[in-house]
Amino acid sequence: MSWGAEEIRIVPMREHHLDALAALERLCFSLPWSREGLATELLEPTACFLAAECGGETIGYAGMHCILDEAYVTNVAVDPRFRRHGAGRLLMQALERAAIGRGAAALSLEVRVSNQSAIHLYRSCGFEEIGVRRGMYEQPKEDGLIMTKAFC
Image (tube, rainbow, N blue to C red; front, side, top):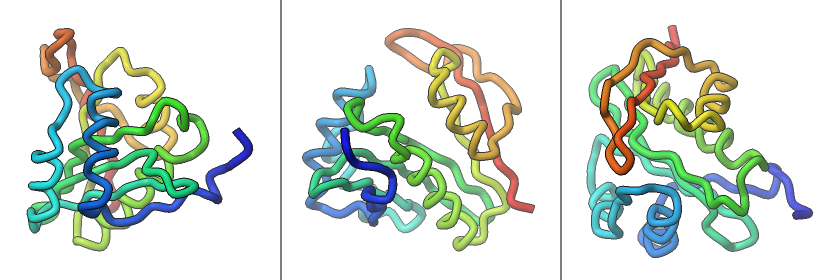
């Protein structure tokens, strides 16, 4: 591919992104969120969902919830055709800015212990491993690595 991270735009998730993101969910996750589930997040005041666009195409998204001073990443997904070009990093950086802007003291997430590429991304963004949730994931059954990044 001849494009780079400078051509990726991170924008607030909107209604027009939902079909592409529901398809991306089915592509990336064994238990995907539905279009309706994603649409619900557009109305949730604690939610911040962002979409990555490149060349007019929706190529990824990330979402979190902020309640008081706690921010929790719910999902991060990038179309496999566009991975390793900076979209995931740009989404995580944008979520971090949004979390700080909403007064969060830290940003936390869980990731499958087998998802080494995501773990590498999160570590490179300053997240630290703080624990394991046994049997957190289904299809297949797997532990979740808890990671957090403190802002203070």
